Length: 227
Image (cartoon, rainbow, N blue to C red; front, side, top):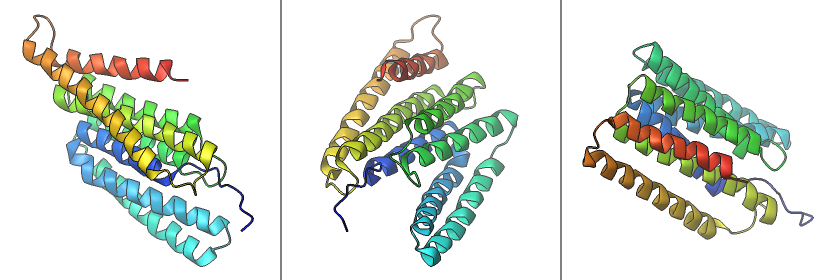
């Protein structure tokens, strides 16, 4: 080894970002939860296999690509088959597309990750959440929780790329990453709690789904203000 720093996104924050995104998709479409998480697992294995193949570990890389690809496609198929109508099919499709883009952004084959892909992935998941509100296929509480999970996912993706660029993947940063993730999750939990309080107040003329869309607007604002 020549001691060169590998400026790739850090593994812990990348994994937490994908899990949070999968949770957001699953909250909007609970029937697709199992398939979504299986698809994420397959995606991670396939990307790691592709990376190993590119770095001359042909046998291990090929095995990872085959197993991950089969698991990912199977999970995606399971998630899609769980959709009971056109609206749910759109939501699941947007959610899976978002997770894939996010995975390619925080688990790149080369380079230091892609903020563009991670933002595209989060935007697609956000559209799935908006669809859940518009089509009323998910309740207000589920939408609130999904928005909070999406904020956490996006922030973890940004942190994974930023820490990887500054310190490299080999640096022992898992405690800092875990603390950062926990802080963001806490803020998201407070936002959800505030939304539930507003809902319980029973404000006249404010439907339950309007409360969820308030947090959706917060997601847009957060993404717009972030540098």
